[in-house]
Image (cartoon, rainbow, N blue to C red; front, side, top):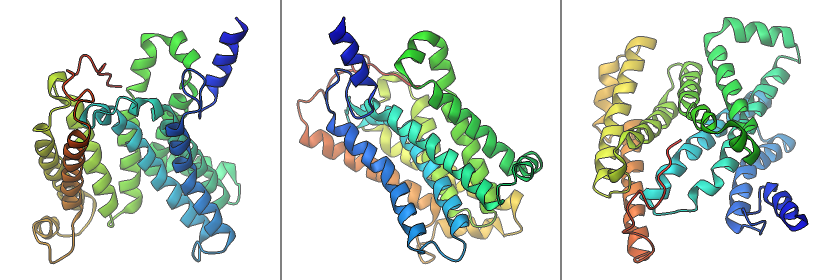
Length: 297
């Protein structure tokens, strides 16, 4: 009994595996999760965050919230696409990290408002993009609070239903980013395209989830949808000529456009999958999805 309790206590530490042993994968992921915050703190401390350091910090923490949230959603595809069975082991770390950056994002906004909580509350209620951002934050807090073994056992099937809301939370976060960005939506378009890639993968039949031939189709579809999102956004939310923006997507003389970045990202996923399979021949490449324990949350 004492040994079992020791293992449970060790397992609760984020840098140990389920057997209570040090996990170098988890240590590396934890370091990667903390690094953006350390860099931001250094920039703030050294006065390198621009003329409006708090505004810059708000922007950076918001960006990393979305990045880590998308990475957490990408770990399920990574398990099959890259035949990486250990990918889901770090999903909890990455997801909780996204929540931490979101809380920092809100806290910095409170600082920017000189700590006037009533003003902050009023802004959240009356500004739509702040309202949806706050709703997304509440969702992230709910997911983080239930990201424990005890919560998983206690909630049963309800845990999986709750954590499926991560996709809706990501969509709200992206909408918050779009509205806040106004006319400069290049990076939000890229994020949206990657999110659409993940949603398209999630819609695949289980038997196709790890197939290489699906990846170029996903890349093409996500890029086209990203272009459609860009056209729709400029048509409905700005006074910019959306047709010219869409035409620029097909021309390289204006630089790499957001939808093109999505296509490049999809191509990179395909290339990495091919390389991984070439280097890892015999390491469960031919195991069917059912044997790999497909779990889409």
